Figure 1 (cartoon, rainbow, N blue to C red):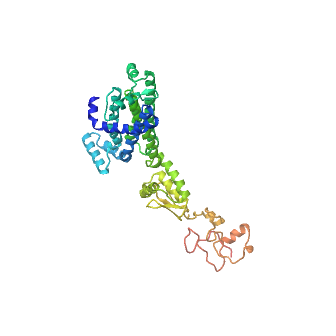
Figure 2 (cartoon, rainbow, N blue to C red):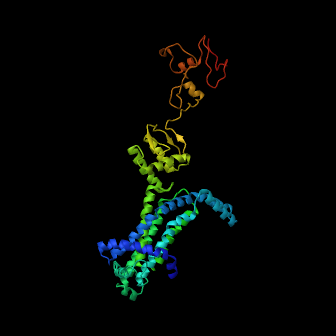
Figure 3 (cartoon, rainbow, N blue to C red):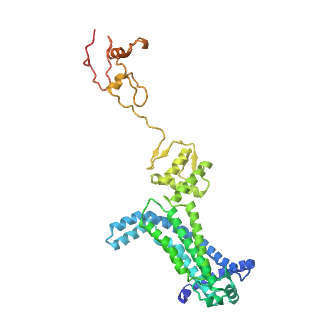
Length: 427
């Protein structure tokens, strides 16, 4: 521990100073020797650190999504150079350089928190061993030793001996119950955060080893927190539980408002956005315009949820523009097919099916249900009115015989010119 303390000594003084400043504020409200004053000071320290780390968190999200996009290409490289590890690593680094991604970016928030974590651990350990750390003098040290959180001293651990816990003014049972509850809550929050990421904010259309790795971490991290948590002081457990809850809430916000393309969260978000846009007739915020602009830019590369969103706008008489805005007055029948190509709701004109010889002679209607352009019941023009035409079989026989002074019209499929009569005509 001395080696770690010496490594992070440059940040121990700033961390202790921040805790003291928050303690002076909460001490005036709850009392300087209470667990509320010191516990809320640690919580406020976490919130301050996480606010400063928001840019790194945004970078982590972008890096994670970029890695998900590259997984198919990475899999191809692994299969192509599976017998040449050196060439495989070179191609991987080349791919990272071309796309501007960094696998370590997803670990930046955790790495950035590490110095503050160890500095706080060193400060709380100094309180347990009665050593002044940073700006914490003797009076503040005595005040921190009197502070209890639900009966457990700030500097007590789960593995602490009963004599040492009694020296801090508490019982070993209280310490172990409080630390056990905190460890369970800490592991559960970590598990839920990772599970939320895997079930809602992962592109379900891509099955890659990266997803299997994330699924494994969903179970590994909680176990690690449970194992190492029994050696953390109560104050450090408060710190880590607070940062896990912050991460969970921050991720819930990102999943709801900026989901990964192709994920279940994106489907839910676009459904909410469609209702909102069709109700107001426009995009109302910069974030909404950015999402619509990204969907329009994709063109035929849109996934099924994005195509459904564009089709919903079209049916409502709206159209998404390249700048992310939405305009009215478009054809509501225009939609997109599964492959992203435009498709209109108007049916194509169909040609009538060709009739058989018996259908043409019997005067049956075409299959399309429309009347034929020319009469099919007679091959000649007749000047006789409808009433004068013979009925039944006589009408059929008379219709099949050309009258004097007229030319019979060639039927469809027959040769032009004189035709051999089917039966001798009576003169």
